[in-house]
Length: 316
Ligand code: ADP
Ligand code: MG
Picture 1 (cartoon, rainbow, N blue to C red):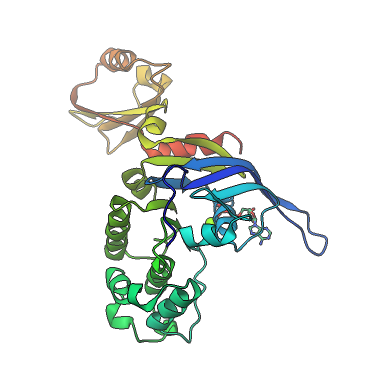
Picture 2: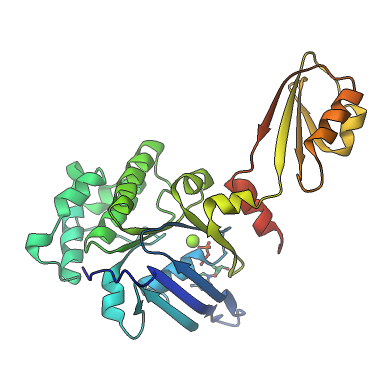
């Protein structure tokens, strides 16, 4: 409900650290090791990383569910501590955990949340949001009767109640079937087109690649990459070429064994290589030296999955 302050980034995170204190003799766990991030207003931003990387910790700090250890966080220019009220009203968070009270109906959940955020009755959009989330016919059923996918969508609806300028979604499509995922994304996309900044974590890298203009990858509590999606992919030193042969062979032919080559279906050779080290011409020459009869050749550009693996493998 606060007006977005367009001069400020949607999210600014500076030197953010989080140490979970070990209880009962357990060692402390450093979940965030001094993270710096900036998300522009209007962005569709992906926050990716393997399990345990610290994504939910970061998001829960922004949501006010977890206390940071040190560092600063500002939403639309409002410091999370100094200007908590404005910061809170600027952001809606869909947490990873399905924490819903089983004895409320979706309509009650929405109305209660609207009350918490001081949304006047005339400005409430309960029906509109429930409809967009495909929950109209469940609006008056108890939350405990909702499926996992429906609860997830109710959490998204709840985060939208106060019309925040930044919407953060932590694994929103986990356990949601494909049709509903598409419905959710089309709604979120529309919000983004209308100016809402979207920050999301997801395990579906294809979705992130398709939706996000900018992607940060975090690993072991550190940001290991943060840039425009296209640039991130362009930086990858990895390509694949597939050769279709005219007839079956038994094994990878001699000259091609010095590359990373696999044989499948008897007549398909898949070769992955680093363009900085190997030229395609070398591969084709090796194939010619092997006397292969090639009927078709396809190349594959690297995708986000490759980027993800390359950038999170380094520090294992
Ligand atoms: P992600 O969402 O990227 O999977 P999390 O932020 O949930 O990662 O977790 C980051 C690290 O912090 C993990 O090692 C996790 O075990 C640890 N962690 C998360 N929550 C707690 C907690 N409440 N107490 C102790 N350690 C925690
Ligand atoms: Mg998580």
